[in-house]
Length: 103
Image (cartoon, rainbow, N blue to C red; front, side, top):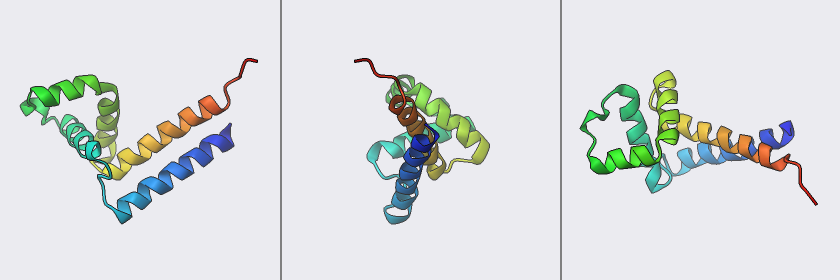
């Protein structure tokens, strides 16, 4: 299982850092919104959100809260968020790749 998680993280991390270098962050359109909302939540400037931003926060709060907590620790760096997402994805890959199957 450790090898699965390590490989899954390595692939995701290389993509995240490579995309940041080659294309820049954000890579995808929603990345910018998640970064913005997470950064504003982390630094306490989310009081000015409009109804749409609040609705997106409510719908994705577990994701945005996790990134906001990371931003409070390391600062609002989108690559840090991409690496966090890579780590979470690798953990899920390890959990599902090692799950027992029924026959």
